[in-house]
Image (cartoon, rainbow, N blue to C red; front, top):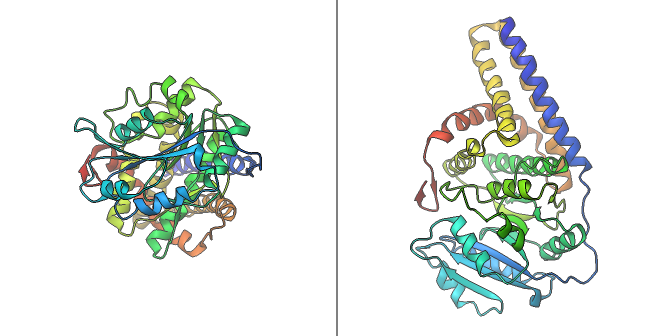
Length: 371
């Protein structure tokens, strides 16, 4: 019992230090407001698309509606062997600066789609986004303004969830908001942790300088984080987080629990592919904290003497997690639902433990493909 309580103390203190440091990093990351100076940068917006007939038109509409000179950006949709009407819809749109690229039979997956899009891109600045994302009219102008002021090699921008109605969708939204804050905080410390290809920006020359996705083509996921790590190695200190509501893209939360779990399995499956890095260490700390809460609950049922370990670990985790969630939610004008948060906190240890133990060793589905 002494060993268990000692372990509880060590894990709790480590986790508290981690999350509080991220809270500090998030708060100290300055919010960005775009300038009114006319932009000069040519941009290529690349949208890898597979079976996106329900989303692609709205996505393109939100881009062509940007308050940014049409002559300075192009849209490249890369069709990844869609079996629906995605390609036909893009072809039917008579929009200047819109390109459609169909992948060859030997080219499969998001990395191939991005590589093909970048190869044909005319812009010096690449922006990758997803077909199921929406954005406000100042999205592009804010990104370019930040780039022209800070001149980083890579920019990580926010991805948020919207239209949350069910309890499960609220949980997903809160999780995404916290992950966005952690991404910003990690870059404040020049130790990048997370990014999303749904809103990722980098120089074309820098992408070519790191040899793109070379050396991790066989890993089906990680088109974003593996690339970020290559940029970190080649251009230390040249990755910045764009803390701005206007620069965020939004997408819907998964409606079915099976889809949400499958998505999280896909995210977690690549953890150990990063090797020994800060990403792996932090993933292990988060897993251990959640696993500790779960085990404390189990052993407390067997022996009441362990209930204090459960109360301590659960309380510590809830307090620091909610502090970070509340701060990030306030910035992005989202509501941090305390009831949903508390209920989610009771479920989360089971969810994280299961995903962490199973994901590296199982297959998952994405866009109709088994991976």
